[in-house]
Length: 418
Image 1 (cartoon, rainbow, N blue to C red):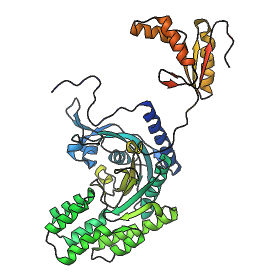
Image 2: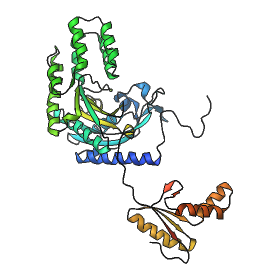
Image 3: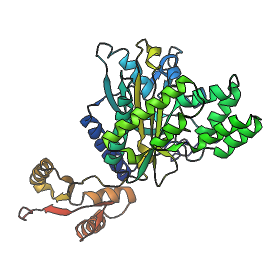
């Protein structure tokens, strides 16, 4: 294997240039501010965790975990999501705090992919966890907050698709009893939104006509309140019926929030994490084929850390939102202050005053840029300094790649610039 070039980086990671970082920070700030307004307090967890605790509990497959050995030979992992670390904290450092807990976060997470096109090995998530409340009200709250957060981020058009793991498990368990492999095949097709493959698997199973009709009909169970009514007509177990009733109650709460028009009940929905136990949802922006938000209920996860509790939450795919979010962060006036050696003190005092007023100020000694350029390029300091001065002071000019709104010059014998 050849040695990588100095400018190369591993597949799946990327550099964020200043304009992208500014947009990412704006999204982060606006979304966390929105979450704080709903009573969620921000938490930070470590980038690395023990494999035998958080790594196993994360539900990310071993093939997608970045594993390391510390100096003692213990396996640690880069966090693959933030939900499992927060479950650890809720069961330890916050174990004396009463439920419900409302926590928010913004963090980078890591998942190893086999150089799949468009899949990032490191990406950012912003999300919340509502721990200790099993009610439909709690599930509706996190969906409504996810909608508010996407709006705060500047995502112009999106739709939430909501399903329930309990309904799918009940339906498949009743119609395909004991056929675990077939159930998993059908779930895999639904997870990938491969409806053609789903129908193909059904044909291969050689089912009775009425069972085939019910399982094919699942693909049409998408819409509003009527979907719940249709699902209750199916021959399903009490557990599956209870899941539908939970969705119906949640739908009513979403109506009180005034967000039903942005939510679609989709009973083909199945979460991409094995720890989901109930409601799951995904948010899709109109310009993207990938979800910009996902979440759901995970009532069994905290028991793995010794503090059993129901929980629900979501994560925004912050990195993906960079492609669709609109709105720019307010940028302060940019000022370049140039000074001769004997006016350095006046210039730097002026810079401090302008920065205190919220402006961005770059200071530069006259001839400084030219001297640096000459040292790097072997040119004439005087000539390069003249060219730099002309470029910096020309109307609408760009100096070293940055546009300045004003250029102030402090020179010997000159008055103070306005």
